[in-house]
Image (cartoon, rainbow, N blue to C red):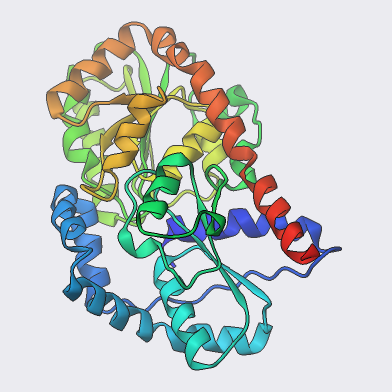
Amino acid sequence: MPWGHRSIAKAIYGYLSKNQDEFEVEYGEVRSNLGTWNDSYTFMYRYLPAINRLTMKLASTKVAEDVWGDVAEKNERGLWNLIKKSKPDLIISAYLVFSKALVGLRKKKKLNFKLWTVVADPWTVVPQSYLKEADLHLVYDEVALGEGLRRRIPSEKILMTGWWTRAEMYKKYNSQKVRQKLGFTDNRPIIFVGGGSLGSNILAKFLPSLLFIDKKVGFIFNTGTDKLALRLVKDSAKLLNRVKKKGLVQIKCFGWIDNMAEVLSASDIVFGKAGPNFLFDVVACQKPFVSVTHIGGQEDGNVDLIREKHLGWVKEKPMQLSNFLLAYLKNPKKYQNKYRQNILEEAKRNKNSMVKILERLKGELQD
């Protein structure tokens, strides 16, 4: 599965697996078969995120439904092999492609497992996320609930929980020790830049601003699986050294980060792509978020969410971004504290999401 959906699956499994005395829980992962669509999506995701608005507009058309059905059918075989092995009573699917495929399998094979599907967009929901055949839809909040009701999903088939964030993202670290471990030996502000497991177009907007910095600052760049972006950051670091920014701008560059919570603990503020999982990971670590880019259509609601819930700022135009960065460096504490209470409350709300899932599951078992 794509990492974001896998992260959700791991979060739910990690919590439910602590209750194995009441029911048996297994984690199953199947390699998705998306054909050429996956390559097209990756390219758009990294370099042309605004284009996806067109995809969202077409998502409700008959052609899109036919394509969606074909893609789902291609994923039935791997899921069927998993079902034959595990013989589940309930499947919680964190990936909408698999949810659609599971609906097809259940009908074709005349299976009787229950299907819970995760609606993995907070406010701008892909229409295919709602399946009338699913027994339950796990959604973030009232906005996604309303969208489900508009699509004639019965209210008893929708459960609002908050976001599904892995437990390790809430772990507390000694930030000073982590900073030293990463090579930051003074008290300069540390800015994390990244988000998006596939990489994104953030760097083209962000890197030029570093040339105008005149105060001490550290940067942690996270480029995911995008090797081209990783090389670009390393080359930019060399350029900054040549123009005598070495003492001012200290750069640490990483591709894929496994210990994200630990690395984020060393940061004071996060500039990144406003994907939902990364956004709520940052919230769990209680850091303010600055949206630098997002996928058009699909993640428009995430930007609205950041603004309306006061979790940070949206600075997606190059000059806006540059001006905000320089203003932040003049008074870091002001920006770090501005939305602290809102972020803390959101983190607590999402941490409770797993409790709500467990309560519903126990209720199903009693019935």
